[in-house]
Image 1: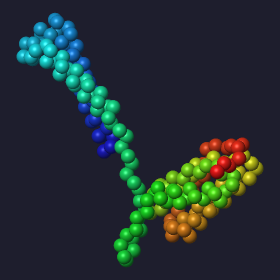
Image 2: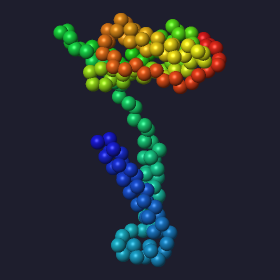
Image 3: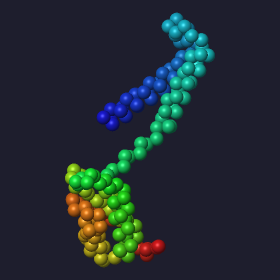
Image 4: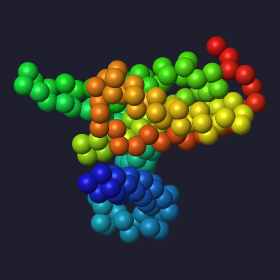
Length: 174
């Protein structure tokens, strides 16, 4: 549905800009204008203004088309008292606080993705170079699983993926 909506908006933009340019160019070419006058019973200045307004409207629509903010995602848990919804961003912030437990990790960016009745966690890290890099990533995966279970009560963690995006020779700055 999103792709159809996007296609229709592009079609509207193209029609606005194309129609506006066609109308404006029609006014500027006297021979074509005389032919168009028989079809359109309007004034030259009025058509020029209308064409320029259509172009301006099309350009304005394109410029004001702000990227839509993604809806907040939540993990939902039901119990006899009701439902509990936890924001995936809140979970990612909670996981991000584990950075202080790992002196070799300079920066960590977790993303929590709900997947059916489970959750996937992808963590991008910038880590200090060293021979223990592989072990640190394994311990991080284990610690994330443990903190999800013990700290949040979420046992349905499907995957914890650690992606080393940058290996730095700098020391951790705080």
